[in-house]
Amino acid sequence: MTAPAGIDVTAPPSGAGCLECEATGGWWFHLRRCAQCGHVGCCDSSPSRHARAHAADTGHPVIRSFEPGESWFYDFTTERMLRGPELAPPQHHPLDQPAPGPRGRVPADWQVHLR
Image (cartoon, rainbow, N blue to C red):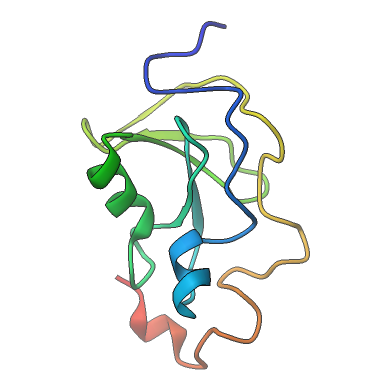
């Protein structure tokens, strides 16, 4: 399968968690991976929505879920799901990493903070 525009199958993920949340001591609900550069950010339900902010800031609109068992792609430009190829490993965050995460930084009342 030829990768659609905006997808680089060779770009590895930037890490195991949301890059910005890790830098600021934040937390996330679920993780999304930029299909173009590999940036890992938090989902739209997370308090900070870093994956969407990355797309807006960089012009990289296509993301892939970075959750175990999920392989879907989404385009922020069209607000639609799309098909995409296998990306460079790993395909998801470590299995021992909780969602929400990261361990030790998720507030007890995390559900009231979701968007």
